[in-house]
Image (cartoon, rainbow, N blue to C red; front, side, top):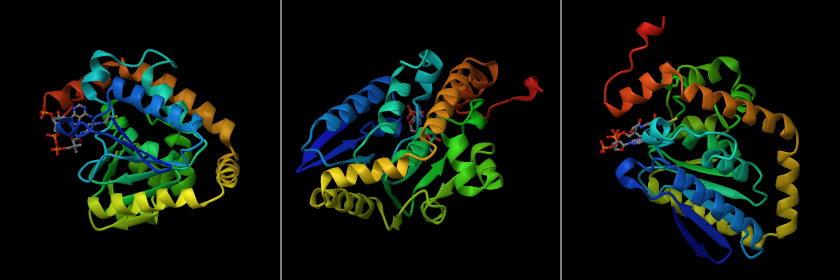
Length: 253
Ligand code: COA
């Protein structure tokens, strides 16, 4: 994760292009640490999260899921989720190319989201023998209705940048990765001109309704996710991804 500072804007760039920015435990720890520092540093007015101009992230590193699944609430991934969930300052995301798994669900916890036309968002948790995470099982049915959310969360259907805007998951679609990053940066820099405490108060009020319920759901999803990662169904699906073959769930019928 590359951390850059420009005036009051902290940019966190996922930078593992050979693995499509798949998130390792070290990267989650780096993101959580950078967010915690940004929270404490009063000169930081906003954070920009990006994967660069080609790819946002292919989600959790699948090899990590197999070899070193999270063991409990203190695991790096859950610490990252809690830090983002509790982050008080505005966070802006610039999304190009694939945004898989947590690459899509984390957007539900950002304040402004800009997507490129080629963005491809996908939450294939159930297809991987897993379950929805990071509050998506609560937020998406409320935002989209159960039927549409079921297409995304149970069938794992992918959707594009324009659809993300139409559904209220993103603010605006831009032509390509460079334009997306430029727009997100411009909007994030805009927070510097605003009254900082008023911005924090505004965000806190907007996030307050239903917050404790959402926190509980995230914990429940996390506990089940940890169990499912160790299930034969998930082991088959994750191994199939690594072996570049379709998963075969026929023996689980
Ligand atoms: N974890 C680990 N490695 C990953 C990965 C992940 N989440 N996503 C991609 N990679 C690796 C691939 O194994 C490949 O490695 P290799 O070059 O050593 O063989 C490399 O990144 C490039 O990926 P590839 O699939 O060849 O690129 P693509 O452009 O055809 O497809 C994606 C890109 C993101 C659409 C595809 O990799 C994908 O669907 N990944 C999703 C993984 C996933 O299900 N994540 C969700 C976890 S909840």
